[in-house]
Image (tube, rainbow, N blue to C red; front, side):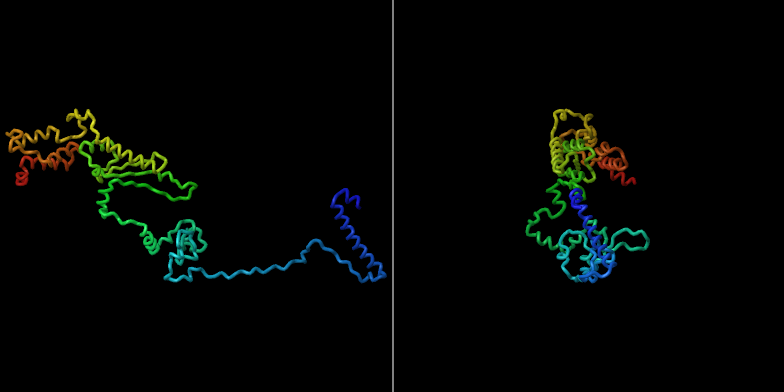
Amino acid sequence: MALLARACGPWPLLWSRSVQTVGIRLQSTRLQEDGPRPGGLEEEEFRVLNLKQTKSQRLARRKATRPEVPPPRSQQMATDQDWGAVWPGPRTFNPSAVPLPIRQGYVTKRNQMSPGKFANAELMKIPNFLHLTPPVIKRQCEALKQFCTPWPKGLETEEKMRAHYPVTCVTSDYCHALPTIRNPLSRIVTVQVELGALQLDRHARDKLLRLVGERYDPDTDLLTIVTDRCPLKKQNYDYAIYLLTALYHESNTVEPWEATKCEADMEFFDFEQSRSKRNAEATLNWGRKEGDSGWQQVPEAYGEAVSRLFNEGENQYNIAKYKEQTLALLGLAEAEQVAQ
């Protein structure tokens, strides 16, 4: 047996031990069959060693002690509590700390209420603004007053602010859940300015309008420049200010060839340099020479009516206005009223 154990390793050793155990059990059985033996062997009992646990031997399970769950905090809150201390900042929705019957979720059956606030994942998905209550906002504003400066004098109304700061910059910021916080749409910059605040003369205004094209709104007198070609918001803002500066200086520049332009070369009807003004003055001052004491100038309203008729085209309003100013120029307005 020892040689077999040396040749085969530990397994034959275990087998030999099991064989010896069986031999002991067989020997005890034979002693019981043969009868009593001297030395008190009939009273000795050989115990059986059970190496494996049988089903009859089961351990007693421990009883799990479950702690008592206290009631939700929302049921014990006072009505006059300091909500800023309960919810001081932005956080995920907590149903036990909100004493409001909030419901959210989709229901499949009709006449069924939405799920409550407990065990509701929909309320935890969205950001909440429970920390921005009016009393908390007022308290935060009072705390920030020590870091603020007084409002500048002379900017009490919207009109005064537009007079001092005519340029308006509009940008957008986005908050979303992505690997990057930079949204492609946040780079777009819109710069608006009132054309009347640029203090342009007639030549510069006409040249600027022809350069900007459809970016000018005549109803609101606003020039809008939108830039989005650069990757960063700061770059687009600088580019928009550069465009506005270049348009302003280019409009005030008078080229040498512009001095040689005649009436046929003009892009619009200019009443001051047109033949219509000379004809109207000749009709109004019939029999007089220019420079005499009784020389009369053509009214400005008549010039505006003629310019609008040529520049904007013929419509019912422009024709009626031109007729009214022509009768007033010739002194026939009272006769027209009497005839009607």
